[in-house]
Length: 148
Image (cartoon, rainbow, N blue to C red; front, side, top):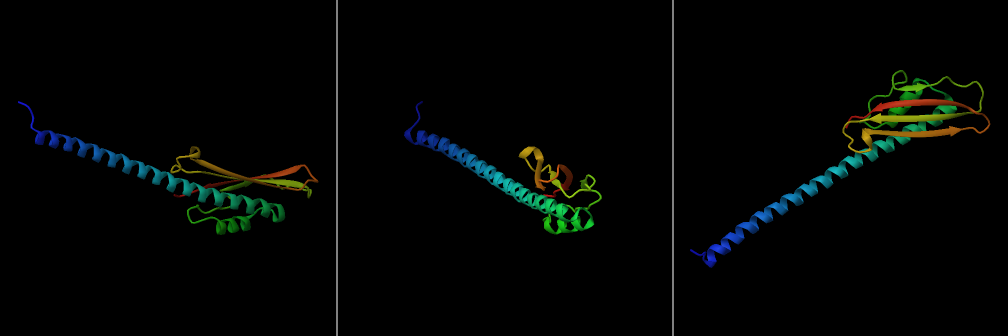
C-alpha cells in the first residue's frame, strides 16, 4: 500500500518538529555556555583587579613604612568582601628589612580558587618599587584566599 499525500505530510511535519526541538536545545546550550563563560571571566577580572590594587598598595607601603599589622589592616580595607581576612602573621611573608635606604621592594600576591576554570585556577600579581641607588631587595609574598 502506498502512503497517501496526507500521511506523507504528517510524517514530514513530525521530522521537522524533532529537528526544530533539537535546534532549540543546541541554541539554549550555546547561550548557557556563553553566559557561564562571561560570568566566570568577569569574576576573574574583578579578582585580578583587587589583587593588583593590593600589590600596588603593599609595595608602596613597605617602601615607605615597612611591614606590620598596620599594613594588613589597610589591605583588608582594600580587599573586596570575597577575599578572606589578610593577617600579617599568616598570609604575608617578607624577608628581613635592609639596613641601607637604597633597596627595591618586590611585592607578590597569589591566589588559588577551584571555581576559576581559566588560568590554571591560580592568579598572581606582582609590583616592584625601587630606588636605583642600592642593590638590596625586600621580597614580600602575600597569599590570599578568594571565596567565590
